[in-house]
Image (cartoon, rainbow, N blue to C red; front, side, top):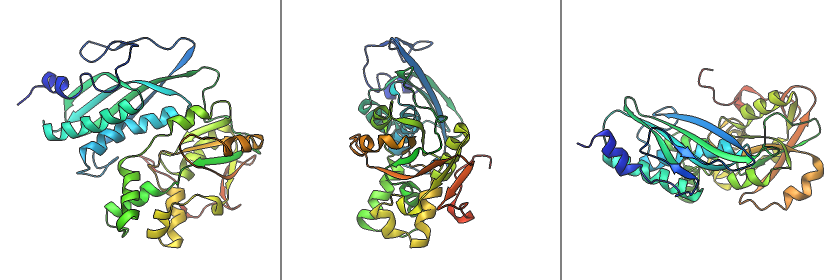
Length: 317
């Protein structure tokens, strides 16, 4: 059986992008990196727990991908470009087949976004993955949750609700076949962080947040930070063909408003930016879904959302 340090050497040393600004990475007591001059350092940490943040028995490649993707999404929401990652991995036992899959999923996404894995920790216990991600953004261009103003437009990227539908399919709560099934499962298994969009929104968005806990719940956080409210037009919510093909009409809105794990960006912008946003090419479709209001609280079609709409995920709620 391999020991801790042999496992680290085999599966994690040299993983991710090979960056010239990494002076010392995996294998020392700490990582040594050279921050970008004139930029603010952005740090994010997310922890994934087996059977809480991913289904028990989830493919190890998807766990590795997701562990990094959720952090990439946090940096995207601040307009930052990711640079370096730290990985904390708790395993119930050594399973080299699982480690190989996890490492492959993590590594592929890290290389795609130019992220170097520079250190971390491994220990024994219930399966838990923690990733700390660091990146940079010009200090005066960082996107924040607090900044939306009454009259601003509300925009969302992609098609919220797909990942929640994918989970429902995996758990047998929704029936789906063919392309719709594959597309919705992919949104759950391989979420795509909108890093390029976050960078493109610098100087355009007045506030921004990523959709990890559901559109209504995360919009509420943005509004609270901005001291404002919001009104969403349900007819403007972008619903994917896959979701519409598997979910009954009465449930589609619930998935789009209350489903989590989409990792799309929800942001506000001055109406004067509409043409610029319509022409923006950041690899994902944008849709204007509502308006920021002066009165606090989140409304849907001018009224408080019903219980069935969902209010987002809360670990202790």
